[in-house]
Image (cartoon, rainbow over the protein chains, first blue to last red):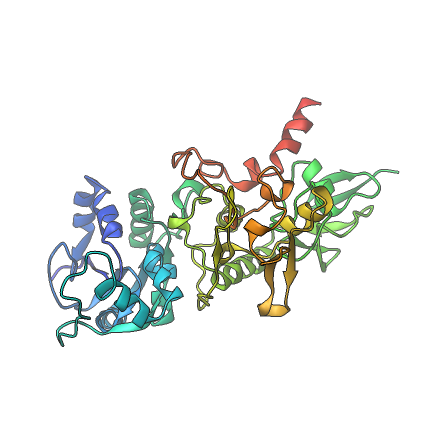
Length: 179
Length: 241
């Protein structure tokens, strides 16, 4: 074990764009690797989240598995960060909240264009969808919000740098975007 | 007789009849606002321009400037209040910035950036609202309407058409369209109308175009609303004198 800050990340109902943006910090990722130890993330491919200092969540909560992962993150992470439009307000996936779940499933699997062998998937391995998609702060307490679709790499870097060095979290005007 | 008052320790001159907002804007001082547009009679409904005048809260857009008044605007308390108002506006509608053509030149977004709002944080309503695309040139997306009343005022006072009105009370308040069917396409609305150009958000939009300005070059991409918003032309005028 090292004294490095342990960081875990997960993508729930997101597109992994925010994770791509984390990688977009380019060579600074080497600097980051000196400062932090990655726990569960899509980069390490660790499946369970351990005790961590910082948990970063991309995407909203759309199914039972998302709820479980999110609560596990909250239990294990001292600081939880809501990263990107979808985890903050549901984003594009929340546009389904205008319709009932039944309407969404029927449109996708029964009546959609080009659907063959029409049937709504019911394999028990598939996590059950929630009636509505929720931003993560409606399920667990969130400590920090970083908006953007995705948040620019520079914004993520500024945040991590300030957080890890104990400085106040502050951003330049151009670093904060909702789109 | 003209006079002078103070906003956040800065002296601001005013002419008789000017509101705090008018005088501040003429002096190039930005007070956050959404329902106010200097071209129209003030409405004082969004409450974002609430300032403290001699210690008492009041809307800057409807309160007359008074000699020697001490006005506070950018205090932590008032900025906190503004963030709360903005968060409520965001959760009451469906504001999907990444999928909105107005993004980057949206005043709701710009004011929220200015007030350092990072997230709406409250529980989202996800209201069920329609999109009316019945008009050949214009589309109205009720999901994004913040009930600023600007289209109502523009259509009534400038266009003389009374195409729009706010109906209902409280959380049931909503924008309605004056036409036999209630649809925009059956109304007297025209893309050349003043009411077609005043929406601060992406609710009333021109059809057949969108995303025409690249990210990075949109109105509020580089500079905040306090610099490039409606206060900008007053700053220029002042410099030209």
